[in-house]
Length: 398
Image 1 (cartoon, rainbow, N blue to C red):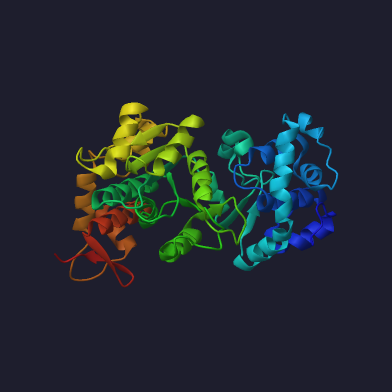
Image 2 (cartoon, rainbow, N blue to C red):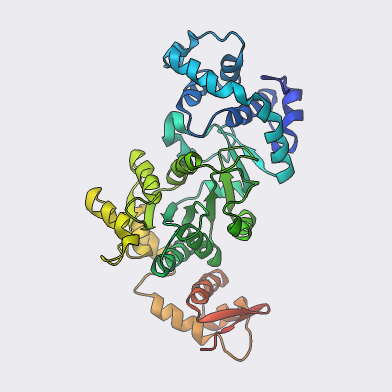
């Protein structure tokens, strides 16, 4: 049994490599937050209020003490009955603390708390429903991008939906906008792949532990995101994804982004839940229209009609939704609709079907910087116009 509120040395021992450099008080706080993530379900407002009022360590002692003073609920703005109900939820999970920490150490996960410099400030908009800590794999600096957009939608996506998601993600990522999604089949997976193909930043928010890639068919994709972006969850390692946790993780997808775009969604799609969270915290909301005969786009049309979502037809619309003006888009965006045809032609003129050319060679021949050429080659690869061959690129044969 791990102590409820250990001394700093015991906290460091329990967390081991999960703990970055902290002073004694910081070590105890980080440990307490890790324990809280094991005891409380994501978004537990009672736990959030208690931690906000007393700090993670003191709140943990209050919550799990054998004779907790219910009167302390008043200090946290809670009804005594709410604290009693919370304790009834949390106490049965005490035995799960040690296995969860051991699973995180085996996975090589990192524990991130609000006390860390890398903590994404955007999550503060969730109030008492903000995560008490995050478990991550990958580059945590990418959790706080200059601009980020959530691209979400149906798992049972159409070819049209996946194509639009891939194109939007690639163009946004190439212009410096991080792409946030949930790593599910369909629109989520297409969004992540599009961002990765353009060499941009992407964040995958999981409903289960980061050591349990879900869905299993996306294990390779999630591993790629961990290698080049960041994978994150607010449930500890070893946790199974459940229906409730999928709904709860949607609040993180919305909060980590400056705007949410629903690419394709049925009338009752879970993606609409993410849109609801975005609206609740004041994030701009966009939707991609589809054929009026398509049930797969009925949810998007519902958003456009009932909640005044912005109609999204391209990356320029996404940049505007994120608050990036035309001047910024001109400076940063490689894929303005007015320019893309010319850029496409310049890159294709620099590659050949007969032999491979490196990215640097393509950049030199086309007159682009290497990073610009790499991003454009990624888009053309998605179109099927070029392909990777050896250590370079060549035109795809028709």
